[in-house]
Amino acid sequence: DVVEWWEGCLTFVFFWVLLVLAWLADIGKLPGCQKPPAALVAHPTSTPEELMEMQMQIHKKYGQNKALSNSDVSALIAYEFPANANRAQLRVDATRAMFGGRRVIDNTGTRRYDVGAELARELLSQKTDTTVGSGDAPVVQFKIANYTVLESSGAVELVVAAVGELKQAVSVKYATMDGSAKKGEKYEESAGTLEFGPGKMEQKFKVKILKSEGFEEQKSFMVQLLEHEKSGGCQIGDLKEAVVSIIDVDRPGELSFSEEVKEVTPGVEDVTEIIKVRRLHGTSGKVSCKICTENGSALAQADYVAIEKTLEFDVGVSEAEVPVTILRNTKSEGKENFRLIIKEVEGGAIFDATTDGGADSCVMTIFITPQQSKSGFLESLKRSFTVNKDIVELGNANYKEQFIAAVYVGGSKEAMESSSFVDKASHFVVLPWKLLFALVPPVDYLEGWLCFSVALLMIGFVTVLIGDMAELLGCVVGMRPTVTSITLVAVGTSLPDTFASKSAAVMDPYADNSIGNVTGSNSVNVFLGLGLPWMIAGIYWAVAADCEPGDRWSIRYPEQAAKYPGGIFVVEAGSLGTSVAIFSVCAVMCLVTLVLRRQFLGGELGGPKSTAYLTAGFFVSLWILYLVLSIVLGE
Image (cartoon, rainbow, N blue to C red):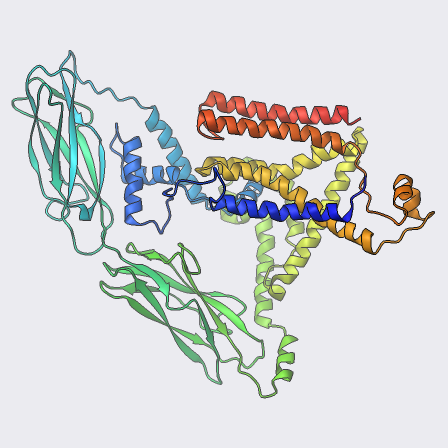
């Protein structure tokens, strides 16, 4: 029933041990945590070689019995090679999805993933009858219906196979046919005859691929099998047409700013700075992108001239210049900043993923530094107490936007119109809470510190309110506080993790996020949520507390006062030991099940539906068993 200072410190230290172990596991330094080094992820920065590998895997898995269109391949790549969201994004998105809030994970990517998942199920369930016609006539067809090749490869090799018993020689003709790729431009026209016979069930032939100048989008052509005058009685099967997709290897380049941060000191007149946008690692083809400014603490038209236009790079051009005008400012507002952003690139170029903005854009931050006054310290002191009126106006506008987003389902009028009935119903249930939390000031005030402080107060308020309401509800229905904590309170705090784990299980190629959402959340709650306050309270009672016989603490805790007359931090255990013991046994059974699934089914999640449902049912039964035993044995 007591927590000594070293116990609190040790509990808190475990949090940092957990953090280090999680980091080591994430980078693959722990046994059994190494992920395949060549795991492919569909991303704007994916190289042509990576994209070709993805397409080849898609065609190999799904294109055996059907010619896949470009849209089919795109959807299947989004399904097979999804870009992973982190735990924070999954948790926030799951919570907002439950109550009709503004989503943080792009719905377009999610929809594309869903389309790919549905198409994958459809293709895998299809059964193609390779025997055409009647009798035992042999069938000749392409072995694979889809081929993907780099433009620089020079040729593509196609395979045609005979199915059935060949008692004599048979022949078929083949011929190329234009698609988006044209003969003489992307490939060399080809036609010929293939002969099959006993012991000669497979034939290969090549079609020459031509290299073009400049960058072009992926193009494709077809190769068809045609009946021969001397067919020998064979028939052409369902896979009578193969699609060859050509990926251009000419690199349009990567776009980035010459520097990510720039400082400008305005004078008595407006100042124009020339910003350079570079095009590295290739200048093939014409490339364009949009460039615009974005407010920071500096505001458009008050501190600088806003920019929104299109930059174009011709073939061979590796640099473009953008003039940015900083307005003279007679107000002393201290150091301000705004951002210059390039985005929406066209022509095949990509952004340098190592710079600010990542793979989706490129960001340059421009700082407007006021001229130093001769008065030095006095001028600096004056600026420290000066309120930036521009940023206050921006904060006021964002404050208003918060309440608008809180009122509408999905955060906007457009999202509300396309939302479902369930989204609308859940939104209006929690609308008072959304309006309450919209009172949290935006990050524009006091460089975000006001938002941080008020948000902490809101979290503390909600925590106390939920705890008290759960205790009152438990009291009304006759539930003990310990029962209330492991049912009502625990379910409420765990629901976001549940939905986040579900999203991670569907979207991630690995089970890390799904299981880590649960184990990580509980571990942090124990080691940080308990360890930090226990450490602070334990040290306080060991150093500063001074109790005497007869005071309030001694009267409230007579047993502890007899053993520790000077006072000690008391945490009454109650039935905690029983509950923790039951939880530990159930947790070990859960982890053992995951290990056995890895050994016998190849993965912690997924697998045959029957075993998946059995595992889910077993885990739910463990939860129910924990509740029942904790309630019964804790009395």
